[in-house]
Image (tube, rainbow, N blue to C red; front, side, top):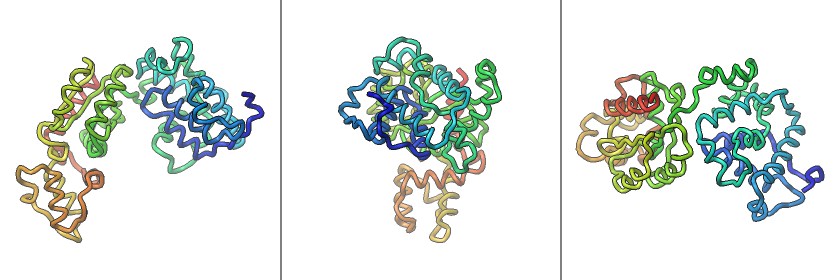
Length: 349
């Protein structure tokens, strides 16, 4: 395909922000770039048109050639200048090589050669100029702010200084914390912050799988790709997937099962009561007695919400308002403290 004669629909800055999110997801980087290439070709290559079937038949290098042309042409039309060096790009590639088993990354895409760094430099969109162009904007997504922060630091250092000071520049991911649901995703980082071992500062990447079966599938996909350990946190009722997980669990990885029920069952009752009474003060109040008994906490809360007129109990919304009310270490139950300590110990191993 003679790309200089291609008719394209240029990418807008919002598109770049969206695709940078995809490109920096915590997955096989070649999967991420393949996904972005597919989307750019389908949405932004007007002529010659390439069908989805034809696109799927192209190799990653051929896809990238087309998508990269659209990417760079769009940068030019938006007046985004390419900086003299590619410090951010080089740093991100270096970070990937520290996190992933690079020899396994290229196998699914039939890429030539075995040198991961060389392949990644060849298969990497121009990102430094875009991040520089975004650096003065406000209300950017967290993942963009992280790249802006890195870019500003990197511009002051030589390549050798970057590699020598890798850990001080930005805490790399040292452990993947894999959980079942959104409650853990919202609350555990907040609890960790309150006891002085914030996940970002410690290099912990939390991923909520969205259920037991997706968790097993996700772990199976990443276990061999990771150089770093994986800590899996399961509800007490995970007996149906326990055999599946333990049979594939690597020695470097850790499996922890909550002692009773799910995470809501090991939360501080005082925190739950304070949160509900503060949030629904105009409607009603609950007491310690309302939270007692052998019934699972989520079931208790569903009944309480209905009886007190609070509306439908929704785990995600409840987790968010609970997160906003965590204010002291006493809000953290002993079991949650134990789990966080165990996670921190795995990071240091």
